[in-house]
Length: 433
Image 1 (cartoon, rainbow, N blue to C red):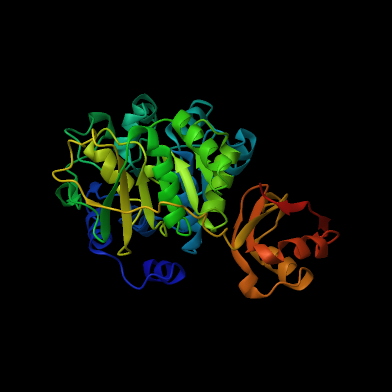
Image 2: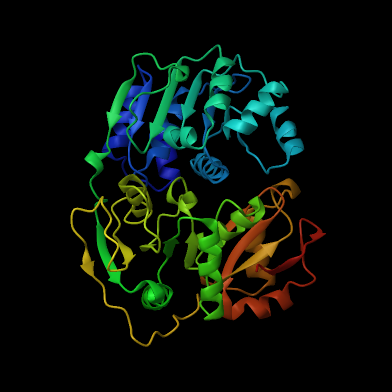
């Protein structure tokens, strides 16, 4: 089953960490320490898949994660692996009624945030006796976000556990006793906090009053590549966004103050290349699977080396290469850097990068309407007159779907499909803003 899953995921071979995790989980509870971007998701999903039993009723594996985006990403990977087992997600901001309906026919694998899973357990939305495998993914982040009480309550309601897998991107002084790990195998792939392999580190020196100008100039230089700009607070994200908007630089924002639907749409447009610049808080430093990020820019300095490494871990992932830029004033010298990186020159007269060749279409129908990717591709090619190379990434959610199409073809496409139907139903289709 694992070989079939890897074939579906177009993965020729597992890395050392993933191989070790599969071996260890056969006999022991596991503590998996590995940096962001190293493939931890498969490191625990494959052992979970190996332990699932066909024909067994009820939830067999429960995966707790600290964020909605991470829950959705893990679900996406599990589905892409082509497993015959049912999987569902539960998280705050999602329709509780939809989740109850899904749980009335329990999935073999349930993924969720601690708060929402605890809520379901209090309401007895599903039985827990069948759960034999527990994954605590990004456990350090979950503790940092204050989910300890919810996780402790959830674990107390799982009497049939025979395997526990805990993952973390940082070392912890001690693992809380409520996790219930029994003589776990510890797999440490953190590399003693060394920089990400394949990562170049550079800096842009500027005066404090000119810091926004320096960022704009740097973005004009690298802005045709997928780039994350990190700020320390959501207010700073919004200020930077307004500055870039006023200067005509296409981008999007991502932070915890946004509605869930807006956050999902932002990530979809970034993944499919419609937007290549994302201004964000540290919310995007972990758990988001966007492997093609070329650059990370620290507009505001992270407080700790740990946070700095997590941000940098968004690029140069899985043997790719990437660049991390620090924008510094002469007075700034991060204590966690032994020496400053080489200086990067920025243009004196910045020129806006070319706009992305892609735009994102919004379709007001999704999985609940029985709409799938094949339906959307058929509409775009047969009725919309697009060639296969004019269609990019397609993502289908519960009630909506998004498709990347070539910008130059979007206007004619919308006219061509204005009165067309999917599954005998007329669907609102427009360019996502």
